[in-house]
Length: 540
Image (cartoon, rainbow, N blue to C red):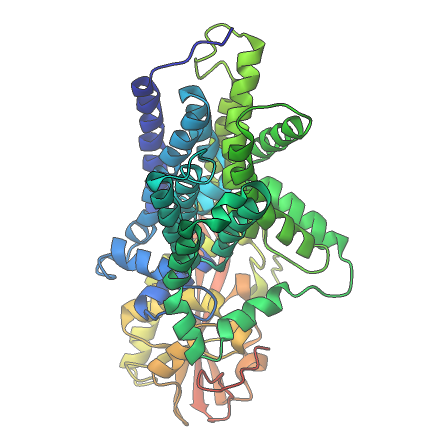
């Protein structure tokens, strides 16, 4: 006998409360934490919009422009607001997809599991990165594909849903190149599971729509020697050496990014299904699996030979969350538990959300309030104080601005530097932090000195900002958690290097790191800046 379910209105009410509460939490965190390295870099996508960019398609920049009213509100809350809104929409989509596959309780489980995912709920749900819009369009494509591909009859509604799915695939591709894996999943389904679609015009129309969406990216790359594709190809081209350390780091990262509790529920569900447990129709299951597994398997395989990043596989787990939700709902039905609809009964599901809540609270405290110094400290070498403390990537930048700008003002008043003196950086991180929090708001231009791997989009920004003129004097800020030997870094390119002052960055009254201000005098004009107009780019 099947366990009791709940009405759609009751289930929707529960999910909407979950969305509201989680959105408030995300919004609070997003508005009170400083930007991470990646996020602040994507601010440049909105500041200097293009059809595409060196390392990613343009969507994340468009999202920032939308929610900040074209940077009229360039604050953390508004720049991250897209993530908060999209995560709420995605949670509801997970609920609707799982509800249609099984029932409303399965939908509630899917909503809780989505909210419990560190990748989906925090990385893409709070922070503003290419994954933020990508998850929205991935979930939307999944919704439309589930409303078309598994249908017994290919009618006008199924065709319309498939074409809409193609549109979402294209928009996912405009967010991040990984969106191509959704199209691969559709192709695998049509070839392996249901060849009727190969003979139907709507499948090819959907593919055409997806490709047309990528026109801006193709046009930009055509005008820039396809540098973006070259860059990413080099990142994933396998080496000949087997690196098990990279492999286990990748697997461990996937477990961590998806929430270890969630990951267990997903893997247990997949094992149960492959052992023969039927939880949904075969074609429905195939759509979900082909939408997720290819991405996970490809990048996990790459990790055997070269370093990868765990969040690259993140979208592949989104359809697996749906599978897990339906699987554990069916298991609960089989257990014949009384009052099984009550949310606190399936501890496996709510436990995952509880785990994430505790973890999030600890992380927020560590970054914003912890007096614990996690970096490398040497009282005799203050220039490396706080080195490699990852919690400081998102802390202290406004503090540096508040303390260092008065020093610059006095330096200018004394006639030591021009009022509009430029800043230089040696890499996009922490250079973009200094640009966003210090240089740009105080009307100074930031110029990046480094190779393609080090400066990325700043090759174009340098050109727009006029580069450096021979004899020019500039400022450099050296933060000790990302310390570089200023003389080794810039000594060959400037006549003289002068230390102006240093400021302290404290957290809960404890010294965390220093920020040194330098004058770099007399640019020699001999630095070989990466040239965006070269026909053959040397990326290293």
